[in-house]
Length: 412
Length: 139
Image 1 (cartoon, each protein chain N blue to C red):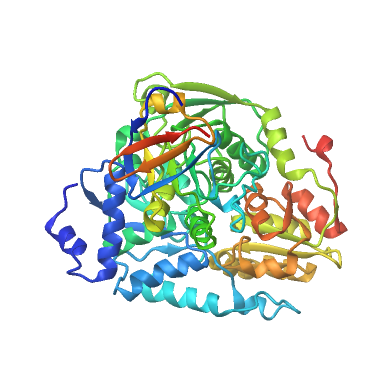
Image 2 (cartoon, rainbow over the protein chains, first blue to last red):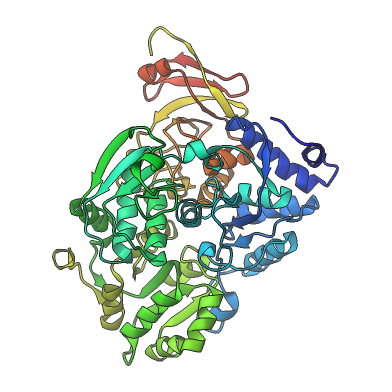
C-alpha cells in the first residue's frame, strides 16, 4: 500500500505510539481490502458504547498520546446524572465505568454528542464527502440518503480514522462499488416508521451481499422513516449502502443506478414478509413493566407525536416509560412544551442514553417491556430483558393500560 | 473431505490456528453469542444453540451493530469461548477490524473447491499469514 511521507511518519511512531497504533490498524485494513492508498476524511462518528473493550481500546490509544485530528461525534451511553435522581434507580453496582468512559472519550478529543443519529443534526455531511461513520443506521444513511461516502466502519476503525485523519481507499469510497446490484421490488404497504423498520429488517435478511436498489417505494419518505429503514437493514443484515429509485441522490434512473449493467439478483418484499418479521418480535402478550422508545434516537417530530398521544393522560402505575433522544431534541422539546406534557403523564424524556446499556439491566432484567423498535428488541435479549416491538400507538396504549395485547390480526 | 488437502486463501487478520470446522449458512452477529458458553442465542439462526467456542468458524460474513461485534469478540476471548479462526466470503470493515484488534486469524477468498469439500467437524488448520487452509482429517 502506498503511504505518503506524513503517513509513514505516523506509522513509524514519529507522532506518538497512539497514532502509530491507529495507523497500523488502518494499514492492516487497507491490505485486507487491497487499498492502494489512504485518503483524507473531513468527518467521523464513533459508535462506542461503554463496554470494557471500548474503554480498553480508547485508553490504549490515549496512553500512546493519541488525539483526534478530526473530532468525531459519539454514540449514546447513558445519562447517570438524570437516572440517579429517579426514585430508587440503582442503575449499576459500579458507576466508575461510566465516568472512566466519558473521561477517556473526551480526553482523546471526541465531541460528546452522545446520539446515534448524528446524520440528522450534529454531523451532516455533504454529497460526495469522504467520511468515516460507524453506527450502522448512520453509515447507511450517510452513504445512501446524503450521498456522502463511508465504509461500514466499526467504532474502533472510525476512531483510528479520527486520529490519523484518513482512511484506506476501498469499498464504498470508490464510485464503482456504489452501483446498484440487487433489485428489490417493494410490494408491501408502508404506513409508518415501524413498517420502514420492518421492511429494512426483512430486506436485510434476504439480501445476502451487494448494494440493493429498492423500487416501488413512496416518493417522499421522511427522515424518520429513512432512519428506521437504515436501522432495520443493519439489524437483519449488514447493508451500508442502498438506493431507492427516484428518491436517493445516486438513483435518478435505472441506467445510472446500475451503472448500465443488469441486476445480479431480483427479489420482492411483500406484506407477508413484513408480517413474518413483525411476528419475530411481537407475539408475546401480558403485563408490562416498562417501555423503551427511541431506538434510533427520536427526532423532535417523533417526540411531538408521543406528546400528542400522551396529552392529558397518565401512565399505568406499574409501568415506566423512557423516550430516548439527543440533547438538542431534548432542549427543543422543553422549549416546545412537549417535555412538560410527557412528564405530567409520568414518562421520562432522556438524552444521551441508549436502550442497550447496563443501566437498564438491574431494573428490568427478567421483565417484559415494549418498544417501537425491532432493533432494540433484537439487541436487548443479551441483557435478559424481553421487549415486544409494536407500532407507537400500540406502545402508548400499552403504557396507559399496563398490558400488551398480541393484536396481530388487527395490526396488518 | 476428499482429494485436495490444502486450499489457498487470502489473509485478512494474521496468525494460525487448528480446530474443528463449524459451518454457518447464516451471517453472524457475535453479540448474540453467550460469552460463558459460546452458544448462539439468536432465535431462528442456523446455529441457534450451537457453540462457536474454539471452532474454525466458516460463514459468509458479519452483520449487525458496528460496536457490538468487537465488544462481543473481546468478551468471548476473555472467557475462552471465541472461535480459533474464521473463514468468510464477504468481509466488512466491522468484523475485519474486530479480528485484527483481537488477533483472531481471519481469511477470505478460499478456493472454490474448499466449499465443495468442507464438512462440519472436519479438522482444519488455518495459516492466515501463509494464505493456506489445510485439511488435517475427517471428524
